[in-house]
Image (cartoon, rainbow, N blue to C red; front, top):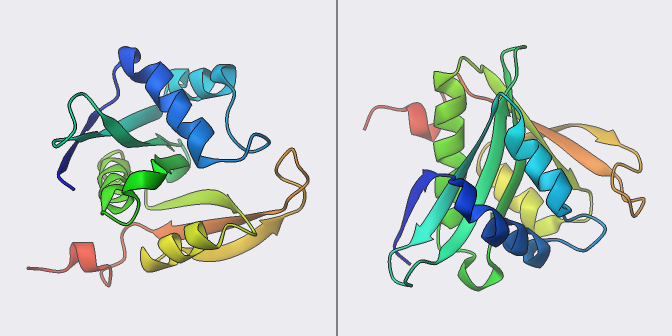
Length: 162
């Protein structure tokens, strides 16, 4: 699948919210108010993946924030189920990590449900490591794993000379 990554625009909001509803169970997905609140935070940015093959089709997005502590936080990565494993999530994650580095973040963290095996595999592929468990993090009582990645590591494939 061919796609391009761009900055979020306010008119994308409803589409992003609908994608989030498809990607996560109701007790984990964001309400409209929650997603809107994340997007309004001062240090938050969102990137959108537009399909170049489907007219006006957003196929995924990422929301992240550059915290004052010098750490980034990946809030959510959402890719439509029909286009998973096509590189959309990887491209969004790399673009967000690049933006976090440019904002001065030396590392980034994220949370995922302990039973979300696909997400855990995806993040491990991208050099994230589990640093702790947060009991009953989600409203359905499921624990979350907090994962971290050093954004300045010289061993990252993205930072190696080509």
